[in-house]
Amino acid sequence: MQLVGAIPTFLQVHKVFTMIVPYFPRVLRQTLAMAAMAVVALSAPAMAQNENGFGEEYVLGPADTVSIRMVAWDSATLSFVRFDEIEGDYTIAPNGQLLLPLIGAVDAAGRTPSVLSEMLSVFLQQSIGLAEEPSASVEVSEYRPVYILGDVQRPGAYEFQPGLRVDQAIALAGGLRRAEDLSDGAVRTAVRDQGTLRETQIQQIQFAVRAARLEAETAGAEEIVIPAGLRHPDGQGALQDAVARETRLFNSRRESLVRALGALDETEALLQREEAALEAKLGGLNTQLELLNTQLEATEQLVERGLARQPQLVQIQSSLIEMQSRQTDVETALFRAQQSQTEVARDRIDLETRRQETSLAELQTVKSQMAQFQTRISMLEALRAEGEVALLDLAEGIETVLVFNISRDEGNVEDVQRNFKLAPLDVLEVSAVTPDEENAAGAGQ
Picture (tube, helix red, strand yellow):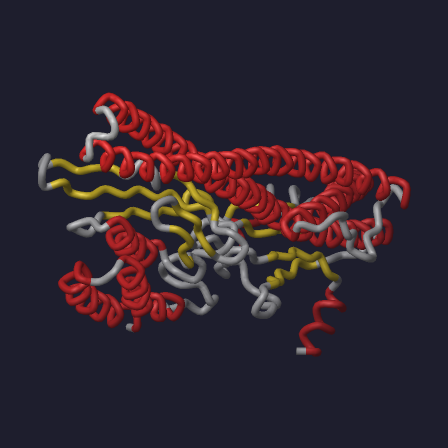
C-alpha cells in the first residue's frame, strides 16, 4: 500500500520539478532532484513483506551486483541514444552506495531495482541537463549469497535467488549428508576445513596490514601504524614479514611522491629566478625609456629652435621604438614565467590528489574484501565446530533428527519448516540433533 501511494506523489513532485529547474543553478537542481527522490526512497524499504520478512520486490543491499542500462530520446536525430559511460555492472559498496560516472554517489541499499531506476533517470537528467528524462533499467545480475552450514553435502556460500526456500537451498548444497558419507569423509572434511580456515585467516591478516599501509598513505603519515592484536596463524615472524613487505611498498611509493614533488619544487624555483631576472631587466628598460623620453623632448625643443638637426631627432625616436619593443618582449616572458609557476602549483595539487584518491579507492576495496574474509572465517569456524560434533555423534552411533535454524542480522529464526523462504545473507544451519536435544529445545521455547 505504501509503495502504490509513493509513485503518484513522486510523479507529481517530478512534474513540477521539471518545469522550474531549468532556471536554477546546477547544484540547486541536483539538491532538488535528491529531495524529489526521497518521496520514493522513504517508501521503498517499507514494502509489503511476507511472513518470512522478505519483500515481494527484491530490496538491494551491499555486495549485490546490478546491471544498469540507460537510453534517452534525441529529438534532433529521432533516435535513442545510449549512455555507454554509465552502462555496465556495478557492485554496491559496503556503505550502500553506487559510484556512477556522470552521476556520482547514489544510495542504492534499501531500494528496489525499480525505485533505483527512477532515481538514476532523474539524477542523470539533472546532472547533465537533458531536455527529457532518460529511461533507466536496473537488474540484479548477481545477488548476495546465502550460507548453508551443517549436515549437507557441500556446505558453503551460494548465490541467493528470490523465493529461495529451505529445501531448495539444501538441494543447492548437494542434499542432506548421509551417514555413510560421514563415515567415509568426515575426517577428511574436518582437515580440509581447517586448512581452508588457516588460509583465509592468513589472507585476512595480509589485508589488514595492507589496509594499515593505505590508511597511512591517505593520511600522509611518515610510517605505518599496525593495529594492535593482530595474530598470524604462522606466528609472529610471519606477521613481521607481512609488515616488512607493506613497509617497503609504502616507502617506495612515498619516495616516488617525494621525488615528483621535488622535481616540481626545482621547476618552481627555476621559474622564480627567471621571474626575478626578468623583473630586474624590465626595471632597467623602464629607466632607459624614461631617459630616452626626456632626451626626445629636449631634442624636439632644440630642433624647433634650429639648434639641432632633424636626423638626430629621428635617431632618438628609432631608439625609443626599439626599446619599447624590447620592453614588450620582457613583459611577455615575465607573464609566461608567472603562468608556468601557476601550472606547477596546479600539477603539485593534482599529483597529491591523485595519490590520495588512488589510496582511498584501494582502501575501500581492501576493506570490502576483509569483510568477505571475516564472513568466510566465521562460516569455516562454524563448519569446524559442527564437524567435531558430527564425528562424536558418528562414533557413538546416535540416532538424530534434522532441525533448520536461520541466523539474520535483525534476529534469528529457529526451527523453521522446509518451505520457509530465505533472505539474502541468511545463514541456514542444518543440524542433526538427538530426539532428547530436540525435545529440550522445544521445552526451552
